[in-house]
Length: 220
Image (tube, rainbow, N blue to C red; front, side, top):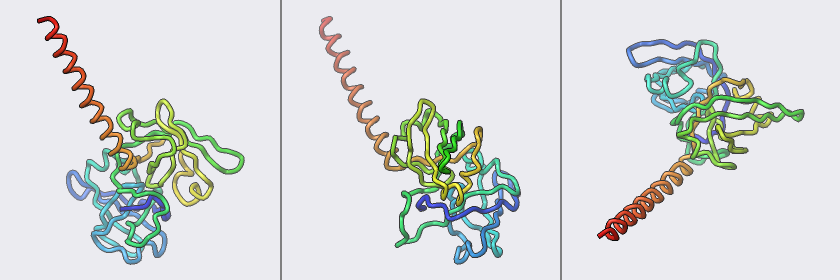
């Protein structure tokens, strides 16, 4: 479990293919960032929960299966790329963002980046239609592991507003139109929307069935 408060950035050292269907990702972290990280521990890389399989100084290695490479942006990483990271939350930690599982739902595409004179940035993102119903104005979403508030919902996706500190501490400041971004929708919102849709569908089916039965009865 994570909080969506990115702790810094790490640099991709290498990506190897030790066996079919798996990639081994090595990243270099800031000095001391891996202190106390156990083998088998969890670290979110660009919002994707990965398991630590080796630690050598400031370098951690992770095994990534093909499905994760396909669904997330990790499959497009190359040596030298910069990623967000967050170590898993511990009991008693401050939850400064929102509860994030590290299970990426899909990727969004940066449609536009608008920079204001005060240093703030607004980003428009296009989101696959299947996931748009889970993104609500003023709701939560995790982008590349960052907990963000949805500023507005658009026809193709949504908009987020980024403050200078977020731009400084994460990779979000380098976003440009066309970039793909990992998206995790808020689990509570998803559960609520799915429940409401299921109830409405069941009721609609009942109404339709009742009307069909009444029509047939009227015909004798």
